[in-house]
Length: 173
Image (cartoon, rainbow, N blue to C red; front, side, top):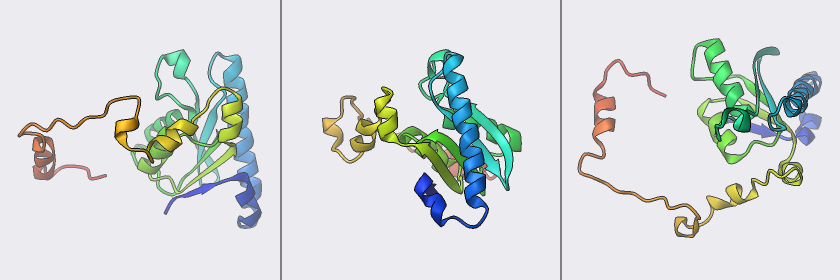
């Protein structure tokens, strides 16, 4: 099971883990601060395996005109390329701020073992990045959402999954 660790969790970490957490969080915070001076958002992330840096990421949403280019997602993309696999099992994501639902979902899909963050959602809200509505959205009925999400099911809707299941050479994930 994946763990989401707050800085308070460092007090309960294994000996030496707190120092490693501090080191990598410091790098994520440095990346975030540097990114602001380079026209990006105030978010940075690193992915580490066995104490070694695998990849870094910075928020490039406005720079790349890509609403999914959050620091955590860019770090996950870079790490997957670096290791040649879509699974980052056994690795830790250190991020300058608590992951939003998009980044948390990406972390789960990447099979990260652990996520450790510095600033929290209240710090982000103070900076103009209020993700609270997104956290709360999934608990509400879809009919109350500001964006319509509708199922339209033609007869061939399951066809792509039938093709997938029939493909013997598929890579399951």
